[in-house]
Image 1: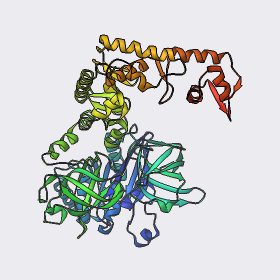
Image 2 (image 1 turned 135 degrees about the vertical axis):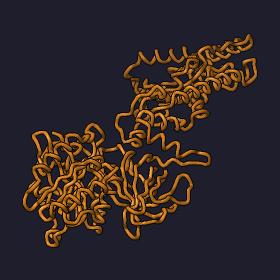
Image 3 (image 1 turned 180 degrees about the vertical axis):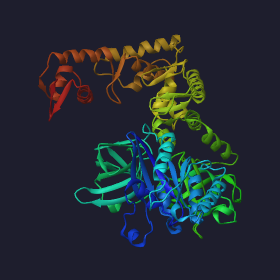
Length: 620
């Protein structure tokens, strides 16, 4: 099924709601006040099955200038516009404002309906068509089909349906393979169901019982049920008007402007970098330039929030009709992603003055000398791979794939020759090569200063050169080095071998012999170091070598034993499996004093050779 969302647009009382009802049989005015006053106040919804494989969802918007904010909440999700102009009145103020809003939101196609054709003479209708041609020249509606219709008599409706079908089949459908996003435009309670929200799904798919996240609050909720265009469904996809029954939340906790997404994918933001376009003075009703730090009403998706515009090129103002790179600082957090379109309106008078496209949501801190315009131009013009390459290249210690998903809005991050994948992280290949060279130089310098040590402790090396990097990134960089090797927790050059001098060899043999001859009643480490025949620094290094090689075993801070001696103790205990004993009995078995017995027993407990039970132990 091909699902296309079409929004109405046009001046108040030009017959948008009546036309939708004539096309679909559905009255989109749902509020009592709307029916009483005869004007549309809030968003209305209807659908039309044009063919077995084609369905159009209509979003009927209010035309009155006081309700443009409601119009904006519905217009953001549309694929095309049914632009309504009354044949007996032609182009009016909200005709112009709605037209500019559609342009700012990036609407690419539409059909023009000349309503109330039964009230206009033929020559008047021809004149209106000429005015419409002039009005739409050079825009997305230039050359669009113009159909004269009457909702009262039904004239022209069949032709309008044909033109809508032709347009709908040419429209690019929304991405059902992307990340699920549903901007909420209504929230209410339904008897027997509980909390229900509605919206136009702009990407991805949603299924019953799925977990979703509500932005900006971050609440995780469960989908109890789904309706698509008023009918129960197990699944909804991009391009469909969707109602979602949510568990675990009250309707009053949800408001228009919030967004449902897949859990853990995105973050709401308060800063967006964008390309901002101001309308010309004729369209916006204002001849004044926009000054830096101008407060505005910011509309994106179904949200409206107060914001401040800050130009990134330090310009003092932007003239009507101009464009600039800007940072928009939002008073409240909103879920926005690169590529999202937005509209800005003045505070007083409240009129549409411009809009644009979100380029970056990372809130990058630009410093003196940074070329923000060049960076944003790359992000705006590049494909996803180029954008990812740029973002990864800006992170010296790499960036998590989850952050790339949040920053790009794409759930599949592409592979690039310029990027290395480090588990769930990415790092620029050039940066990884640079780090490998630095790691190699650091280890080489360490060997030169400490020739008797096997290498650098891995955590020490990371702390010196990559303190802020994730362990995953550090391990990846290290593993990719052609010159380095990791031995457990030590990093060394592949070519490094410890070579002892003659006096060091003699000291090594002397030290090992001292521990071997002492048996379980080992000498104090300080005494062995002093008696080694070499200075203390080298003697301690040799002791560490013997420990690393497993010739000696550190039983406690003060007690070091010869490994074969300890192996003999293990063997003797093996013959006493299941036997219970106390400290006194252990001293008799081993011939050692309490000074040695206690640390030995604690070591055996740690090695799971014995198990302490009260004042006794059991040989395991």
